[in-house]
Length: 210
Image (cartoon, rainbow, N blue to C red; front, top):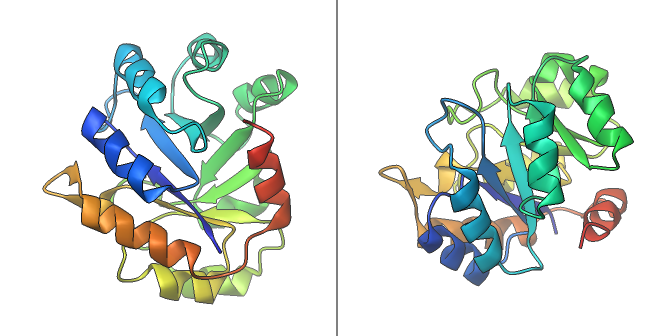
């Protein structure tokens, strides 16, 4: 099976959907100015309602390190996903604090990942644009990675079979008119879990976050 993260939860109704579908992780966006950005109060409410077996990832861009650490310390999130420069000093600070870090970057920078996990995405995350899968194939990435960028229930099986990611990450691909869609989430999780081979390293590390 391939692990899956449903990103961009905003409403209690979204939590009901993912609790039913059982993805491996969810993402809550704290990045300023993003359409799916939520407040700390909303994130706390969603985290309290979420099935404890599903990992909670916070998505950040320019946020201050203190803000990120506070969300971890309050047990609102368990993992940090950072969209930032390759050498961002927050990565080292978070890892020194034993906070698992996903570093999101475009494929051209994939070999420069400094974090625990590598997430491949567009330069404009959440745009729904599909990455160049042929380019990724030619790079022959040796570390387990998370694949994002325009994934949908229609193309996720092809993406997994072609690129063999350890995890897939989806936001707009399971939405209808800007809101999470129960049927799309169910189908996306089912197809990811039925396809590919799980990477033991990523599986083990994510389970240690419980």
